[in-house]
Image 1 (cartoon, rainbow, N blue to C red):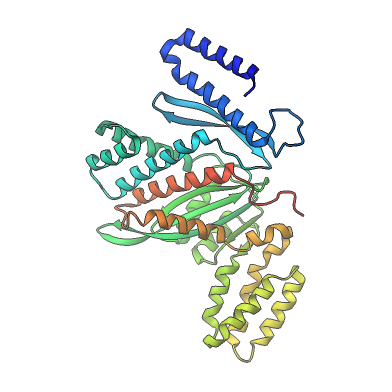
Image 2 (spheres, rainbow, N blue to C red):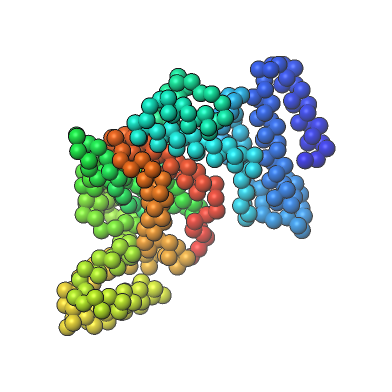
Length: 387
């Protein structure tokens, strides 16, 4: 931080304290922390704002507002953004982790039906100070309010949408059932990923998928150019009803798994998988169609059911060829969602069995919020300039 900036900072702090006294400590902390984050960004970039320097790495890219709860109250911070180099202020890393741990601990305690006294003990370990039962209840209410607000936040123009579901065990009506967690990921025109929404339903029936997709549209989702998903019947019908005319890419990973059900001999599976990969990895749609034709013909005699299935189903997984070549690899499967589901499973298995759908939705939403925030402040998932 330059001497000029230090002088300006001191003057601002003195003015706030003179006008508000100790009541202005939160504002003082905001000022100091915002300036410290800007200074740290300059160090990472090896250049001050607007400075021309051959040592510069990356560029400043404005600020992202963020509210952070502290012992002084709510702080309104301006998080410095960068372009061309990854950066996140070190001053917030510890707070970010504590915030995530706090939300997760509350959610986990909730879903296990743990007493308020036990929740209080966990919070004391996290926060390093005594927390009253009233504060625990208030924190829980704030968490519910926060996750509900995130699930209903406005959406905008999203170029690509990926859909998938996973299952968790939940108590329902006196029995243990498998509940579906429906998740939608979006990629905008800038190539940035975001989690559009999540819903917990008793199944993947069309009515549940349609309700979920309709809610995304009601929140402002538009401009979708491609949907990527598995071939689940309920999702398929809901997708056609909610997004008529939008091209669909059937997940190649799931399709290849489905194909194995039609292979008559185990010894043929490796060869069939290799033939399918050759189709998927073709340089263009014309070559993919040619290779598919040869593959269909190849198995007509030895595996007629497989041959017929391929001819009907594999073309659904080739829609991705209409996209820029640089986008195809990441949009030909729902692997990004599969990895996300694996992370969710790692965190939700702590609860083992959820007492109701609401508790499952609370925890999953809290985890997805953190993931989405990391994605939105991280590097782009796709290059928007690719052709």
